[in-house]
Length: 342
Ligand code: 11C
Image 1: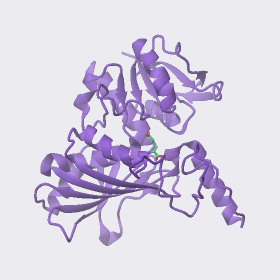
Image 2 (image 1 turned 90 degrees about the horizontal axis):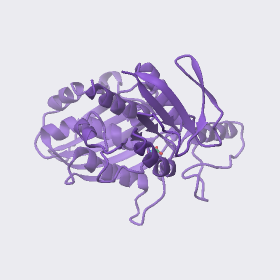
Image 3 (image 1 turned 30 degrees about the horizontal axis):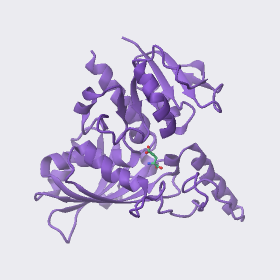
């Protein structure tokens, strides 16, 4: 069977990758509808060698659509997902709009694929920095139980969209030419204060909440518990934007509930779906954003014991934020739906 698929936000950094993923996975697309804001409507995009004109997304865009991939921001999802679902589409939403809604499954297929079946028209795709962490930690949680996670992230500018990518390149060129750049996009484009990202590290991703943490940090806390299906996991996060174009890196400290052997952790992770262990300090091999780019896996390395705690473990987790962190996870959910229908 072939499916009528829509991509909402088709001209964005993630939307573009969604189209490439549908192509490279040979997803059974019959009809394809590419949708965007009025600003980007009219853009021509290619899919399997054929040219498509992007149309403006509206409440009436979804007639006949069976699978709708959304990545056009939370406001667009809040407005249009109900229309798409009412028209009969299964919506896979890459924004934060529905993630914490108890009725909506929040799915990383390596962790909780069984949740997909309980959807009522919308399945939420988790935040990129959360997906790569839970995919890597799931085998450890199953085997030992995770009591506590302390994570610090080193996140690529593409997580903030195509404008942030251009901003990093522009600032870098200006600084190399001896000029002082005027920051315009980061940390949060809608807030008045901006900071330089080139040659810098900004400890703010998204706005601050009243508790002193950013929304990005609280997404890592709340989404991790929901995806793992375990509210008892204690999570604390510090999320930092760094001048990398693509690929989020994370220093993750986990405190397990039972004793472990390092070799067992290595073999558990090596055998886990979607995980590639790159961990050979002797030859200076560890996961790098530059090597993760364009690949669907989550890469784990620097696997080592906490010398101060018998059940403490340190990991370095890297993945392409636009692929496993967004487009690939969404298409993976779509594949699971299609395969379950036979
Ligand atoms: C970033 N993680 O790197 C964010 C982007 O909730 O889907 C993804 C925001 C989200 O800026």
